[in-house]
Amino acid sequence: MKYLSLFITTLATFCFAMIGDWQSYDISNLSHDASLKNTLDTTLELLLQENENDFPSGSNWHITKVYSIEMQLVNGINYRFKVGISNLEGKGLIVTWIVNSQPWKDQNKVLSWQIDNNTQNDTVAQESSTTSNILNKGESSKL
Image (cartoon, rainbow, N blue to C red):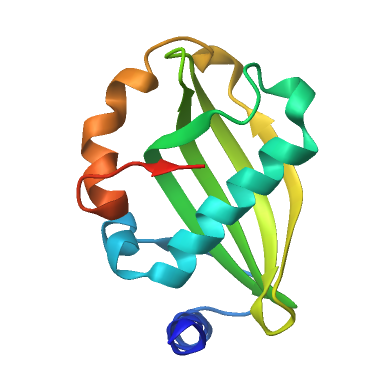
């Protein structure tokens, strides 16, 4: 089922876009796309592990809001995620990262990332209710 969902997503991306162009993803479909949701969760965890010095409070971060997702068909699929995350202390950040996903190799690689310096405060943590419902019908995605 995982590969069928990925195949459909890849096929739709290919049919409606030229190779190499970034295409917006309708985040209201995220709760129905287990493969993409898994990629989002897995790559956030990977990003936090690889850059633990840049994220205070270790890996106690979870997604509170998905702002945007874009896809680019290349050797695999590049995803550009822009999400709000918060930790157990209530600190919030908005983080954007690009990951290359090659599911036939069961491989995800973070290519680049950045923290929006204007959002290093508690406001992201307070925005969680809307996106929690989108992510998993009322449950936030905890790592």
